Image 1 (cartoon, rainbow, N blue to C red):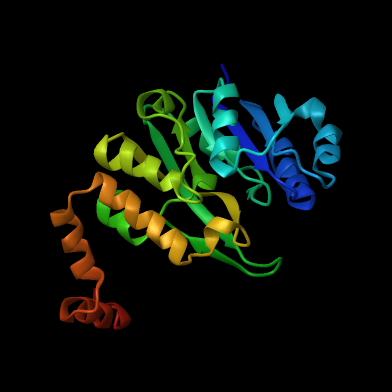
Image 2 (tube, one colour; image 1 turned 120 degrees about the horizontal axis):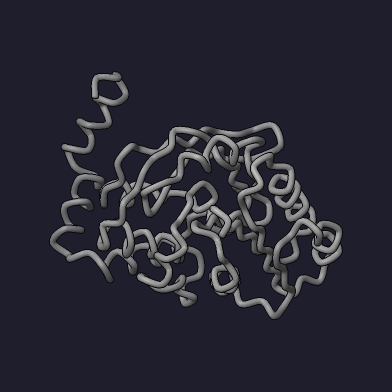
Length: 249
């Protein structure tokens, strides 16, 4: 069994898909299998896949089931100990698997830092905290592009919820990490670049409502009220903001 199943989903993004595939097949560490699920694209995506077919473990181009339906299809084909979801347009840091895979032992989830890619020349470092709490997720999600998930967790907590449009990964984190108390370890290294032109990188009222619905499903209202108070427009949050601006807190 390979240590890692890398799963890439794609729909009509041939250029981004090529970039993603090249970042995977150029990795020096061979302890992975590569799965590509295409949603029956009408551009040159299948042509790109076929060009790298001898370096892809499994690929399919079938009726588009949406982001999480296609990710679930990839999970069902995965045989690795861990899964990593690297969607078309995202790409691995050169040499990252050589540094990171040997460290992935004895934990359910490993999460690394992420480069946010806005343009060819504009990127931003996103570093995560050493410990993940509900407050961590109330403030910010962790990126699946830089997170290794033990494949068996999908048997325990189920596949991604295909009813959600953009935040089923967030729902999975809440179920597995917060409610299920899965073991997690932060690796203070950068694993991937996250393409900030994707749908999930652009918050809007619909996506925010989806997040709130997920939180209300799993977290008691009395607990959520505390987080809403601390992050809301109140004197406490203003004091914290001032202290941070002065680098006091």
